[in-house]
Image (cartoon, rainbow, N blue to C red; front, side, top):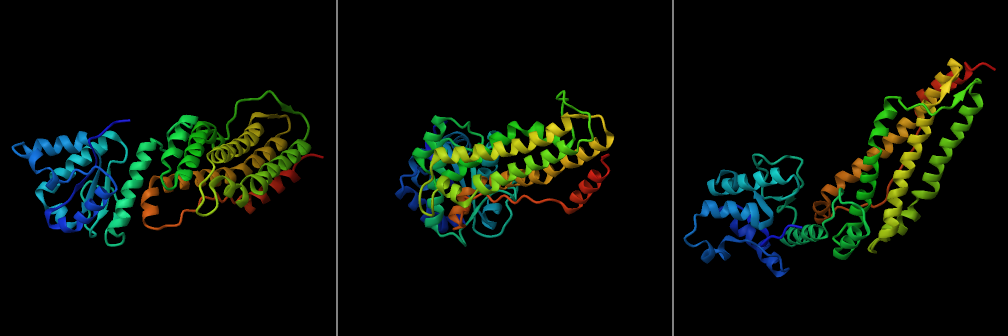
Length: 347
């Protein structure tokens, strides 16, 4: 973990100083190491300030708090700080610039999808607390891509940044699904390597048994694994901490269920069919996995999007729903196509 002399450095226009100072003071009260220009008068005396600012923002601070406003965009000195910060953000490919809006001015180079706080909505106390939470996440060194090990989980639980349960669950799910990405893509290509099994009959009983199996996979997921009760046991009741072991286990079960559905369809495509009608009906049946897999994949991507802006959402007072809602549905048109294909099977 890289060590920095300062936790944060506010970047702002001189005209906005009075709005920035209360946040700086609150951060200092919470033992956050702040690089604030008026505290650095002696240290900056006689230095080439262009080089000093570039060196500080590039190598000496963990985060830059960018106070975005019309003044900020227009001020030449603020432009230098912004461009230096954005260059580092681009180079390190992870969060470094933490924007705080003072008005609706668009800041050049700052993506509209970047999570932000707004001083018109969030009071200084909320913004200061959000910075403290962001630093706690950093100290835990935990992101969605952090390998799930006993050590990484222990570090996360030790720091306990708000929403740590969410970060842990998302990490388990996203890493698990990433390992299955090639199988997921191959499913929609309707490809699987031959498994050596050959169906010599009309396939009716085999297809019937597979329908029962898929129904059971989904029924167990909905009725036993992802119930409100099991999720509360993992994530904790409102105001209560979660159980890291149960969170990891629940995330692994999500991935395992996803893989079970993949394997169910993969087995259909991997089997050889002597009867052409049996082959056609089986391949229609395999498409029943499409909607279920997409639903779970979409849930995972939604979890990831929330995790990426977790601190901002919590600071904004947005309620964080830890439960995972899975709705498995059957496309009526696909069901009709399957029924028609089954009717064509020879007796």
